[in-house]
Amino acid sequence: MDKERRLIIAGNWKSNKTVAEALDLVSGLKRELATVTEADIVICPPYTALDAVSKAIFDSPLRLGAQNLSDQAYGAFTGEIAPGMLRDLSVRYVILGHSERRQFQSESDALVARKAANAHANNLVPIVCVGETLVEREAGITEKVVGTQVRGSLAGLTVEQVEQTVLAYEPVWAIGTGKTASSAQAQEVHAFIRSVISSLHGEATGRRVRIQYGGSVKPGNARELLGQPDVDGALVGGASLEVRNFADIIKNTLQSPA
Ligand code: PGA
Image (tube, rainbow, N blue to C red):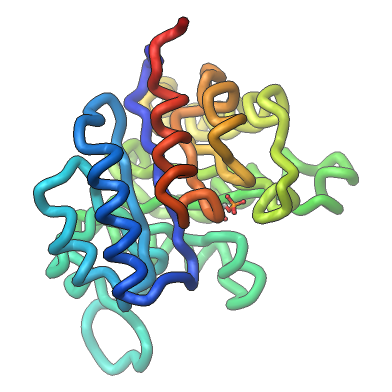
């Protein structure tokens, strides 16, 4: 697939997989994806499996991501993970502001922005998630909600940092529900997000920033979704937990037209 921006496809394992299960999944992914060079492929295991997975993927095209990060450095912050700890394990990406954290841990845009700044200050690439609920979509306020999240979650970042940030548009109603946004719905919101970035930081930054789609991405719908002009990748939950599904999402997306 020929795209203006390099595709980034990430698997968000959420709170799943023991170390043994994680290594099993990784060995299958390494086998299936050994030769993929046309896209950034990122896997985001739980913290407890990061060390083992990091060692297992060092000789593969797979890159490592975490699912959360403290907004602080090292210190007296019980239960938190500082950026230096992730760097120590060769983690490159970190998912921030996932809707499950916004909903169940009450994460605000301001907190997500502090975490994103902490990630950038330590050479981690944040994947910042935004997205509206079903009630918000039905009320016709998707752009208002998503625009506020984008502005708030990137507040205080420099232009260079915004350009290096990956955004993930994940409509809450499509996460884990089997309901995918249509490619037209996804494209519409992605183009809107890009216009928000352009109005804040200039056209060039808007053009360069990568925006993933997330929400029930599967082998059967990935190519169509990722074929949209402003969709630069996918953040995959459920379908990233199984070798065949995740590998097929990537292969189906990247294959040349028949
Ligand atoms: P899903 O999750 O693919 O299971 O819908 C996506 C996500 O939450 O990142």
